[in-house]
Length: 271
Image (tube, rainbow, N blue to C red; front, top):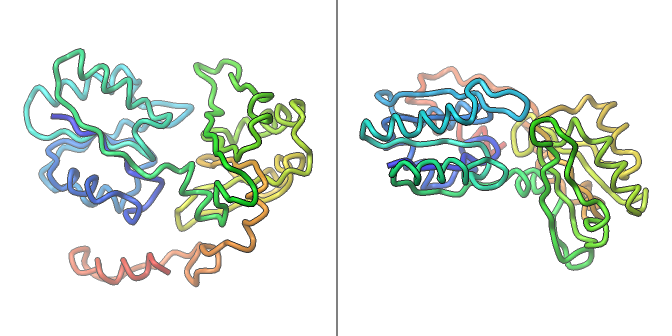
């Protein structure tokens, strides 16, 4: 049996209960680069860990190799967990992995994860829908397949008048903003880039669509980051609950053995 687990956008607090339980019962865990250490700490000592180092521009193990690893370990018996950042089925190639498992007669299940498309805006004070601003939200990948051109229909996106959330697109930010403006989006439309969304080191730039590339460049924002475009971004300042936390952006060393540090570490994470 292979269990695909969405690890969420960052720390253990946004990992689902079902996902955490699957990790605790795992014999083999095959995981991506963006999975945090506090989630990996849930893996039992006896379990085999396989780091496939997957990120948008570089794969330590190519997708074909990951597929083969899943089948190889599953055929040996035991519980295999495929641990993926965010949600398995949202631009995570989880569907391709499940197709491969099905073709090789391997049973599987999928445990959804909290996607950064929702978590990053929420931690940045941006509700992706709001009755006073919009009635729809649209999630788009800004990562081109095999380094080809972006296949984004900017005119239709602008016509929808909803909140736009672009994933894996920080390097394409100037191109995305230029495409939206060329399609008729008002230059003063609020927009934001959220780097390391829902993580302790989260940073954000809030500007207009026209000014966002410059604002992000000035702050030096890098991947992983989420781009949000729409009137709801104007609420970021008023609804920002995360940045004002007393320990936001700080690192605290807990000088206790790991087995005794859990309660204190949990309280510190909440700050």
